[in-house]
Amino acid sequence: MGKKYSSNNHVQLVHSGSDFFDTLCRMIDSAKRSIHLQTYILSNDETGNRVADCLVAAAQRKVEVFVLADGYASQDLPDEFIHKLRNAGAQFRFFEPLFQSKTLYLGRRLHHKVVVIDEACALMGGLNIADRYNTLPQIPAWFDLALYVEGEAVTELLHICEQLWQKKRKIKKIHTKGPAEHSQDGIAVRVRRNDWVKRRQEITSTYMELFRSANESITIMCSYFLPGTIFRKQLKRAIARGVKVRVILASMSDVPVSKYAERYLYRWMLRQNIEIYEYQPTVLHAKMAMADNERLTIGSYNINNISRYASIELNLDIKDKTFVAEVQKDILQVIKKDCKPINSTTYTTRLFSFRQLLQWAAFQCVRMMMTISTFYFRQRE
Image 1: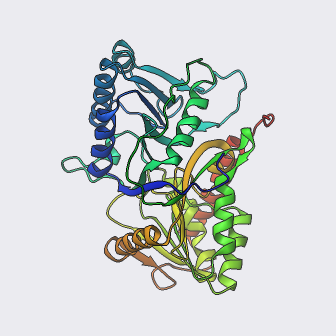
Image 2: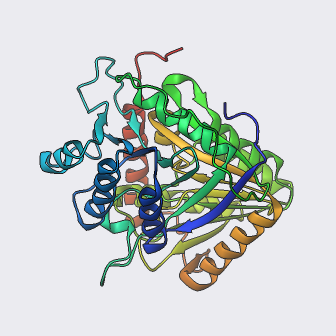
């Protein structure tokens, strides 16, 4: 699974805010047989309860509902929230709560975000189920991206959800019918996963492929951008081939130490002539990359060692010139309207400053934290 592109798919780009959550709720409301929802953060707030109410209504219609949330990131969910789902007939569980797994894989988290409805359609990307990703009065949504998909790729996404759910619970296979009949655009889609413990590095390989094969341009949008040595080498080689590289990053972060560490790399990026843009209106949480206006990848994977080694991640690769060109146009508009360019004029490159000392310290601290969180006793076959 996940190695070849399937061609019989319809795909739409979905933005965070009401665009995403209206789409998600419509999908849940349309379910007739089954719903799989798997996420990193499920919050007991207005947005989380709106989605939960839709799931409750589906369960009351006798739709099979399976909800899997990360045991660390969603550990603050109150019992009342969970009981509301279960009392309606939905099944809910946490993925390997911290310090409760017999395998003790420190740092391994369910970081992917996906919902699959009836093997007919799916929605996946970087968005968690929480107010900060939604459009609410006087609260701007964090900038994020997702993909709505119909077609052959949905079947594979369903298999992935079932595999994770069945790790501890035996359920009957629910995909007894083929994908629903619907209009297709013939867009090539490839499902990609990262789970170091299970020896899956497919998304890492996708990024390597994009960087190695690009001839004209690479566009990266990332919320926690801390590329390791191998990624930096591939970007440097791409630039040496004459490839234009632009990186869109957050100007503010929910993890301040990560932003300080990220800015420590700005000097390296500027020396390589990488274009840097910081998104200004709110927190940027999207994770995507494009090459040559022909291929892109979108999902939950950040370019850092936590995504590479410590988390379960899910991306979709798209190979379609028309669709990728539309996404590129969208991103260029975001750069023009909402981003501030960072260059040698706007970013100090003095050899020594207190700010650079803080950035260096943050970089070393984050590297150490990533090393600790990505330590495992063994990989599984």
